[in-house]
Image 1 (cartoon, rainbow, N blue to C red):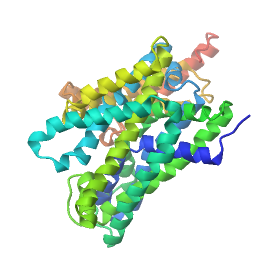
Image 2: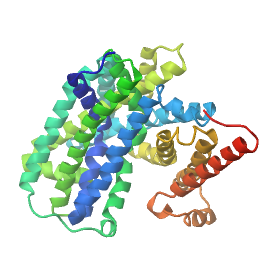
Image 3: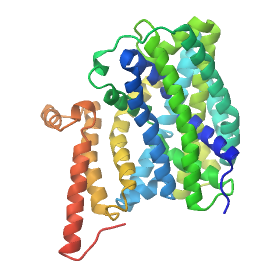
Image 4: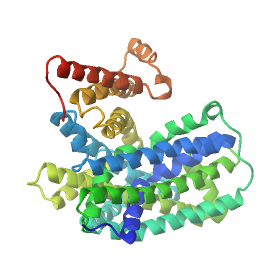
Amino acid sequence: MTSLSRKDTMFVGLMLFALFFGAGNLIFPPFLGQEAGKNFWPAIFGFIITGVGLPFLTVIAIALAKDGVKTLGNRVHPVFGLIFATAVYLSIGPFMGIPRGANVAFEMGIKPFLSGERSGIALLIFTILFFALVYWVSLNPSKLVDRIGSLLTPVLLAAIAFIGAGSLMKYNGPLGDTTAKYVASPVFSGFMEGYLTMDTIAALAFGIVVVTSIQSKGVTEQSLVVKAVVKAGLVAGIGLAAVYVVVGLLGAKMNGTFDNGGAILTTAAKALYGQFGVMLLGLIVMLACFTTCVGLIVATSQYFEKLVPAVSYKTLVTVITAVSFLIANLGLNQIIALSVPVLIIIYPITIVLVGMSFFHKAFGGSRLVYAGALLGAGIVSLFDGLKMFGMAAEMAISLFEKIPLYGVGLGWFIPALAGGIVGYTGEWILKHVFGKKVTN
């Protein structure tokens, strides 16, 4: 049996870091730092739990599931598995995630140097070049580790370190004031902010990319693949956590009020290095978005290649890249307006499904337990998504607001727990009263 070498483990870990590290991962921590102020350390701890810990666990769950996200969904029902997996890949792939990444790269890397009336044409030209490069790198996933893990990630980390270290030396004063949001419970508030990275959903797609990369190195035994995934995940997790602390600490030490983390980083970069600093920050964001888009196209293409074997991987990469290119030219605001409600629906279901996968043996793999928990979470998350679309009645809103933890965005937790208990009870009755069992 062949195990992954230390060198290859490091490269796969760096690849995973780059796949996860999009523009949002760079922008959210400094804004958290600005708002948390003196409570920065407990707040960033909470952020790391959800921004690093949950994606790490999701990648491991995918490795354990052998065939990826569809296998997890099949534990509920094969139809649910197909629908859920397809919805995940389409939402974080060509319909939302990839176009949004390309737009963020344009907004922070190119648009600051343009006049407003030229931005439409510039976006078209930029996306043509951007997706041409993404297409080229995505065509050969076996070289993904070499192209991203050993080439692009070191450049990305070096650029972040250049701005981050310089900024911390310049802004070396005490931590700023704490806003009301982070006074009472900074850990919990930071925990909720970590959801904004959306990396737990992305991990459903990236998990299979990592597994495939490890297997391409000659590691085929599942136990060794899972072990390699854990090690590579630790490399990526340490890198992500380090970046979050550095840029978050920068936000906590900078004076002034900023609308978002991007403004904080742009101000710091310009104060340190002038226009060159702004260009460097733009390069960081474009690299981060580029590597994430490549990973999403590869993962989505590999999923649909297994789903529809008659269609070649190259054809799928071509179609997904083309669709992403077309949607990207709708503009960032339109994409975000459509994507956020959909992600709000999918995210709690994903967390519950991944969390239950680690207790699969404890409740005997009962489909009733899976179905009950996901139904409970799904009702709340579907309502939240409809509410964001403006399709929820006031009476229903007042009713849902009575659910424990709803006000802090965790209204799905208690219904999921209750649904799982009901499912377990139903399984027990079927087994002990009727002599039947509903398991996977």
